[in-house]
Length: 257
Image (cartoon, rainbow, N blue to C red; front, side, top):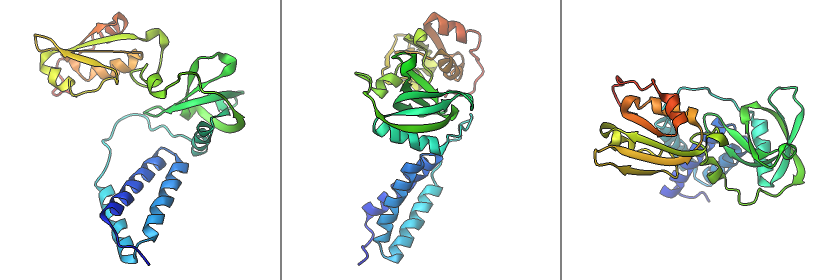
């Protein structure tokens, strides 16, 4: 006998639909199909009337939700590559990939995680090039094969800790170090609302300015972000980042980020 639609079920159907669409947008088709199957199994247990109502309500909510448009490249990841990556990470299993040029030689890598963003990266070790973890742009992986060969994850590895070494996605060990920014008093309260880095610290000075400190690499991505603040922020450390943004602090932006 069909079940009556409960408020919790209605919310679950909406949440599953939102998650499934997000997975499809990211070409995670394996996850999208699993979420859609779970959503459908809930709907089929309802009466036809409640099923139609739940689908209509979910569509109404979804039509009212959208992400703020963010300019930038829409990087198309290959669904067949994404599915293989997920399968390899489950093992974990080694992978054979073609990376860079379409006719490049295959590489055997040991996947440790995915960094998703404007540009998404596979974090992996390529044993024939040393023990250090490397980043492979997902949009430049032309083909991937999951091998029936497991491997040990690097001792002490944490994807969150690894990601925190950079301000964005790009990592440069040579740039890693203490970052210190000073936001002028007129921008301090707004800057205090931001999390610039998971491990940041912030303190107000007597003059009302805000000092933000953290350790990371990725000066170019920092410079892109700092440009939005115009002349309301100063780079105190490091000198290399200070030189990179010098002369680009505009005084005429009508609003803060």
